[in-house]
Image (cartoon, rainbow, N blue to C red; front, side, top):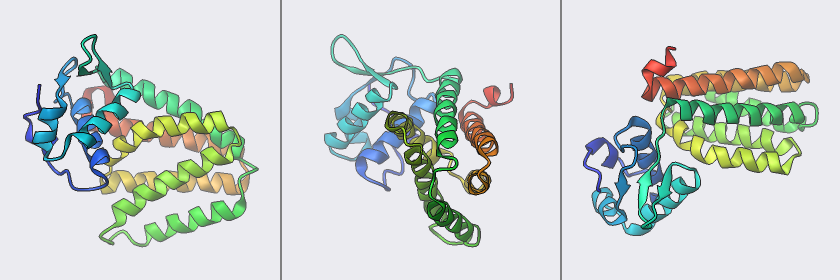
Length: 229
């Protein structure tokens, strides 16, 4: 079954073709425009997106690894349900992992690394009118969480955080309006300030608050009823 909704097929313009197709498919799953159990045809998707089958195949493969698309007994791809409870579980796992990482990183992360991140964050606060501000804010978000995960010193923890962030990267893109990004930037600064002062408890609490806020942004975007309960 192909996709007929214009919102899904629009704006295949940024990042690599695979990432763009991945993001549009994820948006369709999150919004319900791609229904639970709907079969996906690589040929139809490629035609409607205006790309070759290769990026569509790669995007479907990635979404399969992320647990959002499954293969049927006849080797066809179909959408797995992604309701508000699923999103909340994803962010619950993210909070468990990243709070553990910031706990381990506190006190051992290099001060120069923290200063560099803090400097980048402050520069962003002073450049809100720049045309590429949103992209820079998203890039900083990636670097911020990667640094803390790596500084935890636990390679398995780092690997699990990376696995979840493959999925969350698309969530960030979808909800990456200026207001959400500005809020996330302030939350990052709170975490950084706690790490710079060596306050492990404050850093963990700030990270938990940050992830809860990003969860609520996703729920508000796609599941407004769940966000208010």
